[in-house]
Image (tube, rainbow, N blue to C red; front, side):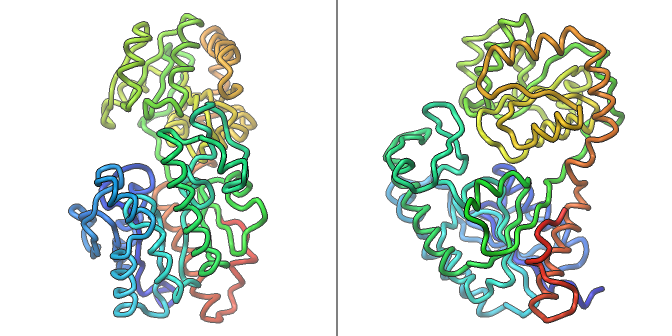
Length: 422
């Protein structure tokens, strides 16, 4: 088997410190590969201070765009020449025919410039779509002004003339400029690159006209937060876990909870927390919690609510809840919602619809029988919607092996013919 494994894997990520889901997964992957004695180089835009043992760093020691001065952020965010030159130099010195390059993110520090030196190794590049930035200027297919999912074609006239950015139209123009540069470079350099998505439903957003290269679907890893799954019908708490931000639907949930006579436990932090506390003192605000605190709160949960307004591709909190036997109530804009409802592990409501959310909250509070059935199904079926951490790493490693086999001419099939990998 060892002769089919990569010589080395280069993980390319804006951050080497956890700044969100993408950077956390990039670090987890580095640790998993290193534990299997596969050499790993972590190419990142920040200062690599806490990488897993055995992982080599190549760091630009930069800062995220929002932490840089406006001029520097505007220029380097579009095209970070230093990132391009440093990656090109590394490839020139260290590349082998069995080196894999796994891109997890480049929109915060590295910029689309890193795509240019990857041209010479494009048949060994894996692009991981943790979000929608490969297609959408604001990365969410969401109109932050109207609070609705956006159906406009990216960079179309309708897109260009719409002020959908969470900050300003000037920021939208800058984002469109970056998207145009990215698209130009990707179309020229990576017409057949392998893309990893976290949910099948992302494809219609990322590739409405079809993908020129293989698409592999690998669900994100998740583990149950509780040692033993709950029988949730014995509990009473309605819980939200995640960022306290308008996009996540927290104001909607707070308003619906109040009208339904339900005190929601909000677990998390974010820019909307202060206003939410002032406007809705009837709810409980637990702030950010470590895993012990989260386990303590979820041990009394009857239902976890994920009211995200836009088409979020994956929800870690709902999956962790389901694995712990806790039913979920999700907005129907979330890509997981249809699968969860189909397996009768939870319910959905129309995204942004306060009346529908009130109705579903009241149903969950008033029916022990319903919650018992949903909880039972969650305990039995939820594992099919995610992978354990090791399984996730193995699935990605299998993609690497397949890429190398195809490029090396081995008779093991063609990645492009294996349209889905789970």
